Length: 277
Image (cartoon, rainbow, N blue to C red):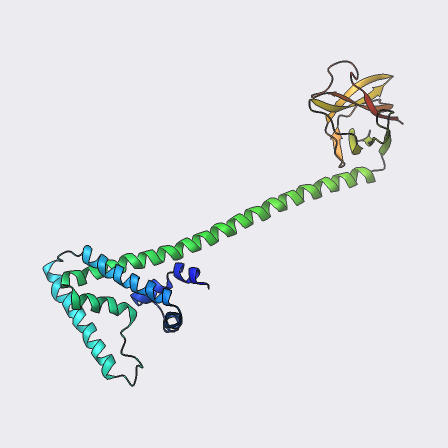
């Protein structure tokens, strides 16, 4: 972790409060010997907690006085034992969290020391909230990824179904093909029409037409007994798309019409491709 990550992790605050493990204590103490900014940060945390404890200090109920003073006495005796047993503990430096209690008990009145309990509770809740927030962010990230994967799966599924339908149409022995070739206005234009009388289905595929101008749309016409019959408007795509089935058609044509298609009995715009059986 870099300096910013170490400071924002809350580990230094946990060290001051005595919430860290032996391994974490060793790591933090190593950082403190190497980085003056970390030492300054730790001292500021200690000072802030002491000041806050003093500010929020209130006279506790009488029955708690002896209990709190007894706890402080126990802590003091524990510290003396640690000093006398130096052969078992390399340093007489008290545990980080105890330093706040001892500092307050030695320099402030017992009411301020009692307020430390409130401070530890507040800080503990803050640390738990930070951990909960990290967990919540992780869960949110995983949910977002799952949603994206589900969306991608649905897209792939729809594409697979479409391809399967196209293959079924092409493999059906009753399916016929008409190639619609470009007119002089667009010699390279092209489209393919598949229809199956048995299933009463007609599909347009591999459409290669110029982009339609704004307000315009291509329209398919079926020619029945020499007269054009509307077979629907469409937007050019290379994949197969289903269009209107027109019985008795001998040929087809595609013209460029106002958006929504021509309402007349035939094309009002230029014909771009056409072809017959």
